[in-house]
Image 1 (cartoon, rainbow, N blue to C red):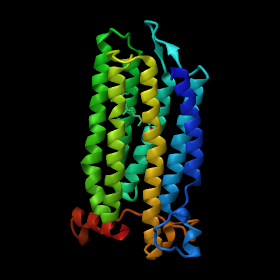
Image 2: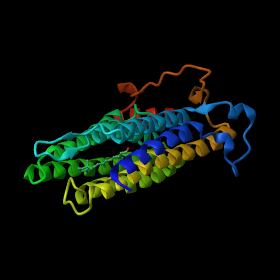
Image 3: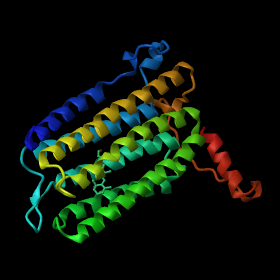
Image 4: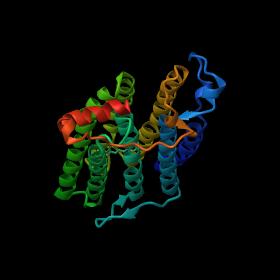
Length: 288
Ligand code: RET
């Protein structure tokens, strides 16, 4: 297939993926404990988050593919090569959304380590921006490799935060959250690693593979990182929610539609009640 056929295929796949993600329901799952009609009528907060995040990701990517397939979303850099800038716009929107979903799986609530979550999203956006700057450089310029190195360093930072402090937080959230986080993280880490490799061997980098092949690989990676990952992550969350709802372990304020409003507070404890660590531990327990 040539480049334009791949792009058209991508646009169609994202259209279908968008519908598939919106249509995925807990009730259709077989081999799960039988749910009562009351629990089938509601969603958990996590299910709602996952469905919204993954449908926005797929919608964004589908728009980028349609733009590219219709011959737009690209321009000529200073040495005349084509830059598909819309890819970077797509990635700078979708990758932070994907990491927010993963981060929420680990933390349960963003308030626990919001600085960490923000740093993760910033480092990720920085990785995409510097990758774009690498693509803008003339193909024989040493600055291309400088930006590529900086972007790869940022990617290492993203992996460090995901496999270090966030995995630790998932452990504290509970065994089910840790299991879900580990599975989603493994999937995501494996697929994301393909992007800098495709860039490196493609026309942007060492030019070992041609434009058509490279576009085909990006299409496959994008479908896997967004549609397949979205369906995988959402169905994992739905299974976890089904177990929790059947066991009556979901508090009212976590249900959607929510019967009661709930304000999350960060309780550090008063100075007379002990040290800062004590306050933090109490905050954690109250949430769990
Ligand atoms: C670039 C080239 C410069 C070096 C690095 C890169 C990494 C890109 C990544 C993109 C991920 C995109 C995803 C999109 C789908 O939602 C910019 C290719 C490190 C990791 C997951």
